[in-house]
Image 1 (cartoon, rainbow, N blue to C red):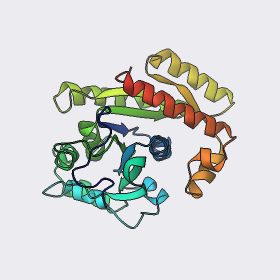
Image 2: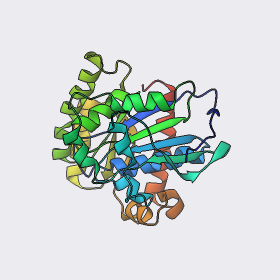
Image 3: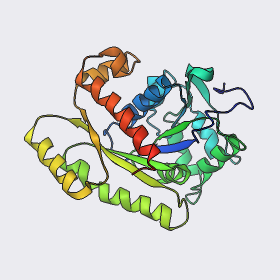
Image 4: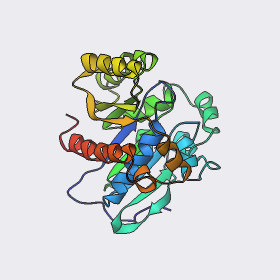
Length: 272
C-alpha cells in the first residue's frame, strides 16, 4: 500500500521535508490546511505522506478512512508506519495516509510519557537509505502532549494556524516556547517555525484588530497569505475535493493556491 515501489526514489533534487501543523487550540483549521497542502503538492507531482496524529481523525475521515487507526503502530514496541495510498500513484505524484481515529486516545495512557521519539524512529526506519516522499505533513492534535511532541521531534518545520480572534492568540507564545524547548533540549535541533498562518479571516472589527496584534507581535513569522472565512471550504471538504476544484472562482480557492506557492518559497528558503 505504499505510494512508491520498493527501492524507488522521489525527485533527486528535492530532499524529504517533514512539516507538523500544530496549535494547541482546537478548531483553527489544522486538518483543512493539511488536506489542501497535500493536494496542492500532489498536483505539482510531489509524493506526499499525511500522518494523522489527532485522535479526532478529521483528516482521515476526509479520505473516508475513519474506521482505521494505523497510527497506533507508531506507538507500538517496534514503531513503524502503516501507510495507504489514497490519491494518485507513481511518478505523477500521490498522497498516502497514516490514518487515525478515537482509538488513538487510548495510546496516550499506555505509552510512556517520555517516549517522545516513537514517530521519529518509525520515519527513520521507513525512509532509511532513501527519501520515499517529498513531503510528510503531520496533522497534530489540539494539545501540547505526547503526540504533538512526537511530531515536533520528527519534523523539520512547524506550521502554526491561528484564528484572528483574541483567545486564539493567547496560546501562540506557549507553543513557540515548546518549539524552542524541543530544539534547545536536544530532541530536535533542526526544527524551525515555517510561519504562523491566519485562517478564517472575515471583515469584522475583531478580526482586523486581532490581525494587527499578530502583525505587531509576530511580524517576522506571519505568512503573507491569509485564508478567508467562507462556507465554500467546508462544502469542498464534504465533497472530498480541495476548494479550488470545488469552487474555482472563490476567494478561498485563490488564497489556498497562494498558500501553496508561499509554502514552497519558504521551504526553499529554509523557513525564512
